[in-house]
Amino acid sequence: MVAFVKSVTFDSTDPMALAAFWAAALGSDVDEDSTPRRAWVEPAGWGGPTLWFQPVPEPKTAKNRQHFDLRAVGPVADEVARLEALGARVIGRDGDVVVMADPEGNEFCVES
Picture 1 (cartoon, rainbow, N blue to C red):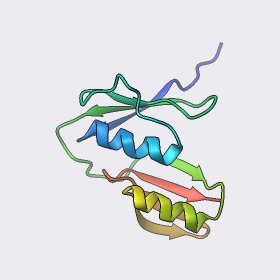
Picture 2: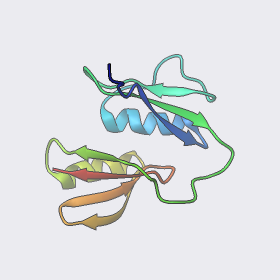
Picture 3: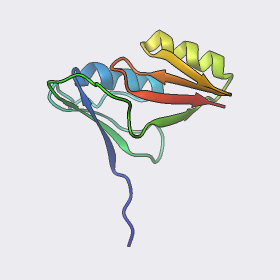
Picture 4: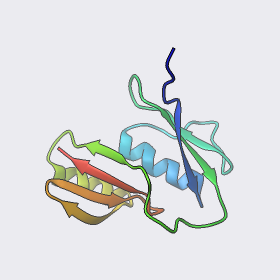
């Protein structure tokens, strides 16, 4: 047998707010049983890991050792603008890939 990714956990200063960002970014909802001590977002549609958000006292201080690569369904510029409106910010570009950070500074990429 092999294992599969059940969930991806984010350390966060505000789990509910960060869960709300990622739910909106990925077309899902924050689970109704979420609390400030544990929030989660189930994947929209079928498949994919659940995103968990847990509180930690310290802020993020270094670059992520792993990150999400998001594929834009339409033009990358439109998706970047949508994510910025949700609270993300552009932190760089690498060719056709836009490097962004969520509201707590976790890096992720957007590409076509």
